[in-house]
Image (cartoon, rainbow, N blue to C red):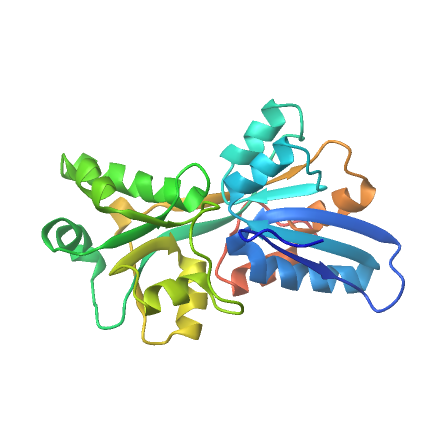
Length: 266
């Protein structure tokens, strides 16, 4: 199967014959960590795990129009909840957390304590993802709302200036093998780009000239990633879903910068 431009597909195979198959649609920010977890799980349990990554809202739309993975792992709880309300999935549950930050182009330094002043008073270009299609865009809007509570008018000012550079099917894609955020910010497409902290860490590994700034405590925005089993998913998918809440999976999530939510399963 050929992947659409806004999605990527891969398969994790054990060298021997597989006795079970599981398919998962997952947020693009989970690509590295789910790839590692699926590879280890597949090898240990003779399970073929097929993964498709993309913006959570776009993945939900594909499920609504006929695609049927066993699992949907979104960067929020809203999109899997919509599938549950539509009768397409079981109730979602929170698995891991992430935080929003601002990736900075080379040569730009901002500090958390003065970040809001800099965004409002300096002529900085701001990038973000597409709200509705990609939860990171929705989380950026939440940051703007929190800014507005401190400085009325901030929401309009920031949302009008922000450029939606990723997240929808019509946005430019990074060349093969490049990290999207490293590629965008090396150009640079903006002075700063709102994305998950885990994405920023990966981008800086590829482009060390970049940096990022965490959002200050009173304006910090956390992301809750939700997992839902699709109706019709079998026992193999249920076992893999349970594994994603296990201690061993949690260790991998935390090594990639995510925070495991809830009490880990044995």
